[in-house]
Amino acid sequence: MKHPFNVGGLSLDRPFRLQRLGHIGLTQADAAGCDAFYRDELGFRSTDHLQLPGMPAPIGFFCGVGTDHHTLANLADLVEGDNPNYAKGITVNQISFQVGTLEEVSAGNAFFEAAGLTNWRLGRDSPGSNWANYVFDPDGFRVELYYGMEQIGWDRRSKPVHLHTSPDYKPQLPEKAEIVEVLDAEARVATAVPGYRPEESMPFVHETGGVLLQRPFAINRIGPVHLLVEDIEESLRFYVDKIGLIVTEQVIYDGKRAVFLRDGTDHHVIALFELGLRDVIKASPRTRLGLFGVELGSYRQLREAVIWLRERGHEVWTDAPQALRPGIDHAAFLRDPGGHTIMLYCGMEQIGWSGEPRPAAERPPVPSVWPETIEPTDNRFATLTRQGPLA
Image (tube, rainbow, N blue to C red; front, side, top):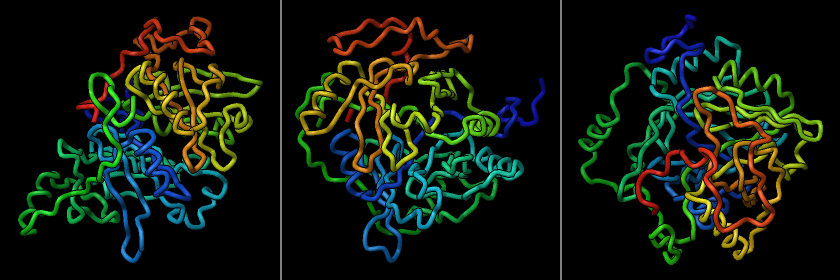
C-alpha cells in the first residue's frame, strides 16, 4: 500500500518516524529540590540549568543518563503560569520522542497544523540544543518531536552558554551542521568558556558490577510513561493516528481499561489509563501522570536499590498489580518530592516479528518475596544496555 509521505525512503502515513522515547519534563513546585532528589537518590547526572534574564534563580534543572544532554527536566511551576492544563493535573511538561532528521521535525509541525491539532511551538531548545516541535494531546499533555540532542562526552561538561541559541528561532532548511556552529563560535570567542559540570558530593563506595559507584545501582534509561486520560478512544486516535504508536495490549482491571502502546520492540512506551484507576495505581491526586519508568542495569541492582532507598527513608512499594504493567515483571515504586510516581524495573518484554505480545497467562507471577536470582525465561533482558561507563 502506498502511503502519502516518504520518510528516509519509507512510505508512511505521517512525515516522521519515532525512534525512541528520549526524555520527559516534569513541572515541579520545588524544581531545585526535585533535581537534588533525582541526582542524589536515583543517580541521574546533573547536566545543566536554565536561568532566564532577570530571574534570581534557575527555573529549569536538567539531568541525564549516558551521553544525552538530558533524560529528565525538572521545571519550576512558574513556567506554566495560568495554564489551565497544569491546574487540572497535567504536571508532565513534555513527553519527548526522537526522530531521525530536522526535516521530520519541520514537516511534523506542518502535519499537526493541517490535522487541526494545537501546536505549542517550533524552534531550537537550549540547554540541549535540540530542534523540536510540540503538540498537545487531547488531555493537554505536551508531546515533543525532537532532533539533534546535544551529547556530553568523557569530561561530562555540557555545551557552554555562549553556544546556546534562541528558542524562537525556527528552522530555515537547510540549516548549517552543528559542528559549523561550534567552529564559528570558537572564531568569535577568544577565550574558551567551559561548560557546566556539577560538583560531586557523594562518595563512590558501592561496588556495582565491578565499579565503585555512589549507590548500588545504575540507570540504563528512562522507561514507559503511564498517563491518566479522560477519554481513551480520543487519546488513541491521537497517539496512533497522529503520533504513530502501535497498540500492543489492552487490560481490563476492575472494569476499567488500560491500553499499552509501543514505538519499537519494547512492549510499551506509553500507557493510557482510565481516570478511575488512579487509586489502584497509587497516583498522587495532584497529577495525571500515573508513573514513568526508570530502567536499572540488572535484577540484582533492582533488589539492592529497594534496600538502599528504604534505608535512606524513602517509601518504596512492590505490591502494585502486576496486570497493570504487562511486559514488566519485578518492579518497585516510589514518589519524587513533587508527588510523581517512579517505577524502577530491570527489563521489558520484547515484541518480535509477529507483532504479538506474550499471552498474559504465560507470564510468570511475581512472588511477594523476591528471590536472589531469577530465570531468564524470555527476551526481557535483550534490550540495549547503556553506552559508556557506569559513572
